[in-house]
Every structure is written in structure tokens, then in C-alpha cells.
Image 1: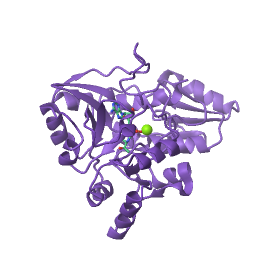
Image 2: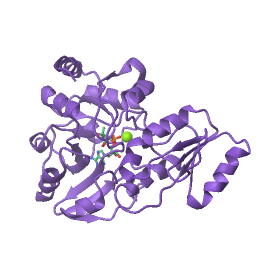
Image 3: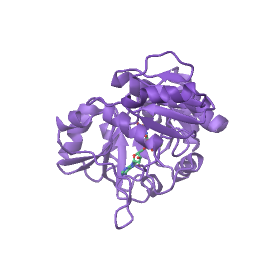
Length: 319
Ligand code: TXA
Ligand code: MG
């Protein structure tokens, strides 16, 4: 990306305008994180509920330090090991960031993205950027500049950095003293985090607690969902699913296990990293096909990023 494109984006951000930018996970909808007015436009454009806080992107650890009231040794270890990279840390905040970013809560989510365009943008802007995924709230995230344009048309300036290499959103980890809790699984796995610190087994948090608060308000059951009704199946149902297509049902199938060539089939990779990278583009394609339903085979492999992939698939098919 040339310096001029970055300069142009930075001057738009300074005028409280929105700029979508590529990261290694998905495209982010960027705005000046210190400007409540700019951040309000992000909530409005995404149709995001105001109780769902935004991730703040930083150029380095120093920029993160300026936003938090505590930085436990665990945070330092995690940031040193995984930044720049797909790990978001939730920490007690100070008042540098306006309330609207954190949905009025006591914590802020910070992440340093591993993408040359995002890092250059952050460095030249010199201040943190909010960056929720660049899609309408609840729908499938954008992994190409084209997906962003389809979601928002010309209401957002897009920095095109090509397709995102990791493909699903960052792992969100709350850090409290020496303890870490995974609030959203992602491409940084539980096993990798456990090498650095004590970490809770991920339990999906779908419902508010008794006080009506949600540990991570973005963890709604239905999320990352195509507009077309989406259902999951397992390997024992492959034949039955193909039979339904052959008897004339208007379906689109996403499967990493079915080998037959078929117009209704989008073949997914068998390795987790490639599957994650291609998942959202496949969901967008499936949605555009005008089928009555999308049927996705739920991978049953263990380890790597498969559990994060299953989390996204279950949410896509929920409700
Ligand atoms: O990979 C990613 O994280 C992408 C790229 C663009 O960086 N961003 C992203 O942002 O996925 P978003 O806004 O779509 O998802 C942020 C998630 C939501 O589930 C939100 O509820 C949670 O992080 N979150 C943000 N701030 C939080 C906080 N203070 N406490 C708990 N959860 C928080
Ligand atoms: Mg999102």
C-alpha cells in the first residue's frame, strides 16, 4: 500500500470519518477511538447494540498501556508472545477512551493486529482505532475489501489489503491478575495460551447473568450468520444431504468431507487453517446463491483452530 493511501485514510480518520482496514483476521471498521462522535458513527453504521463494546486496535504495547489502569504480568507475557497477532486482551481501563467504546463498562479490549496495512495506519495515525468487524451487526464478517463494500457501499472508505490470511476473528481473553479466561475462541488456541498462563476452559457465554450483565456482550448465540437459513449436519448425514439436492431441493452445501462434484457443493479445505481462511468467503458465496437453505458439515476434528471454527458454525446456524 502506498504512503499516499495511508495519508489519505489518516486525514479521513482525523475528520471523524470511518475507514475500513485489513487485519490478519477479518476487516475492521476503523474510527478514532478517542473521538466519541466518530465511535458513535461506527455503532450506527453497523447497527450494533450500544451494550456491545468495541475492540481498540493499537500499534504496540505502549499504546495499549496508555489505555489501561492495570497491566498484570500475565498481560505482558501474552502480549509479548502473541502481538502483533490475533489475540485481544480485556483489561481494566482508565478514562482515555470514551465510555461509548467500552459500552460504559469497566474494561477495555485491546489488540495489536498482525497486518502491515493496519500497523502502518496505526503508526501514522499515532493513536488507537476502534475496529469491530466490518459487517452489519450479527451477520458474516468481511474477509475481503469486496465484502466490506457489499455491506456498506460508499458510506465507508476501504483500504484494500487483499484477502485476510487467518479468516476468523481474534481470540478474546479477559485477564485478571494471573488468571485468563477465553471469552471468544479464535485462531490463537487454548493450548497456546495455556503455555503462557493459567487459562479457563472456554464455556460459551450466551445469556446475561442474574444482574443482567454479559461477560462479553458480543457472544450472542446467533452471530456470524448468513441471511439464508443455515443448518449443520455431520459426516453420517452426507448421503442424506446429497439425496435432498438430487430430489430437487434448492440447497447450498459447505462440506470438507463430500468429494463428489456438484453445483450445489462448496468444497471446504480439510486442514483447519485453510478452512478458517476460506469460511466467511464461502458463507458470503453461499448466501448470494439464492438457495432456500445453507447446509454446513460440522467438522469433528480435534485441536488447532477447529474448536473456534465450530463456535462460528454453531452461531451461524443458531436461532
Ligand atoms: O479479529 C478481530 O477481533 C476483529 C478484527 C477487525 O480486529 N474484530 C472484531 O471485533 O471481531 P468485533 O467488535 O466484531 O468483536 C469484538 C468482540 C465482541 O464479542 C465484543 O463483545 C468483545 O469483543 N468485547 C469488546 N470489548 C470487550 C470488553 N471490554 N469486555 C468483554 N468483551 C469485549
Ligand atoms: Mg463482529
